[in-house]
Length: 192
Length: 402
Image (cartoon, rainbow over all chains, first blue to last red; front, top):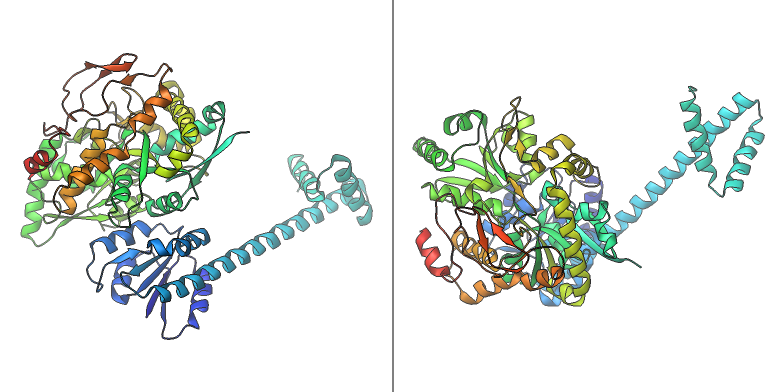
């Protein structure tokens, strides 16, 4: 069975690829390029195409499926009344699936479930990464604000930090917010 | 407590009404909180609607009908209680092709340009080439308008030329790279192509059909049934937004709002051109005023005419093949819900037409028409080839087009 993963995010495509690699007699191809997409799909003749919902080429691919008789049978959006739940879960996860009409439903479900799990896992990884980046940025602005206070008011590092913390507590805001305000104000006043 | 409505949209100028209903507080006045969900393909806008990520969507009108009839995927009934606008698309050609079929500095005459294009098409065919045109979706008014124009000028859209699907944001690229010879797309994408010197605007779709239905507000029929009262509130909010959009004094402000990164993420000056019906046809030339290029409010433009849905059905049959099925024709007509529109606006100052269906393309001049509420006049609504569509004669109309 041939599966094509179409995703402009190479990182996410590889996470899904990895997830499907363990399946028996499953040949997985990844397409991340927008150009030549239809030609690649035509050459691969996949049984299943998985594509992220944010992919701008979805309408192009659907048009190809609509006009194409290259595949043994036309590919259809994977919606069958009995599969509503699976497809709903895949849309929630952010992946659309196109399947050759009449392909064994239990095999589709297994692949789709795996793909959904990998999509969700990738989304969590992304959220963790964004969170870590946010924390790093916060720490950087606190460090910058401390340096400004140490220089302009002659404070020691602990005192500079204490001043930020006290202001934050008095105003009911986060230290990072106060620090950012100090950095912004310093910039406005011509500091660097 | 405001009731939330999530509305999906593509970044196009005609997504304006839900965006402005939110930004100007018209939705809030009706007790609604709109959440706008931006996507980059009609397929995803539709999936989010069908699987409940959104409650309503900005959608190409034929796609709402195709989805209800189960063309391309298992049938799921959609309902259209409000039309988001008429026309607003254009045909942009590669500069050298444009020079062969259209006069400089003005929009072309559709009949004359079509005849000139036919000569080019035949010449190309003789040399073993077919011109390629891009549309945004097979179930789009762009596809139907382009095909209507070509066919009426003696060019067979499926054999004399090639029509392919290109997403709007890539249409200027495709034209520039020579992948296609022309595009039929909504704004701001024609203007983007012009600004990049990738092509010249030769026709507005409003020249092909003066009052052609374009984007609609689509909902799952089940959502409309369970949230009927809120849907009516939404229709009132969208009507306020439509009036605001059509006010020339507000064009700049509205263009600026639409240009924001959460919405169209584009140039406000290009968006303003579309809103004010003043398009720059070629790079470095002064804008040309073409009245009613976009038509979002007057003459009850937002009224979902059953006859418009059925005209779209005729084009679906015309280009996808198969015989006219009167059950499908009726089902297509029922996608448009004038009853909901009327209920929402009854007792407001908005005019409501007396009929829910009309002979499309039958008016040549400003005409007074029967109204359920207020006074209704309608202007020229002709097709460029002079045909009209009587929804009681669907099979006869289709036969006459062959």
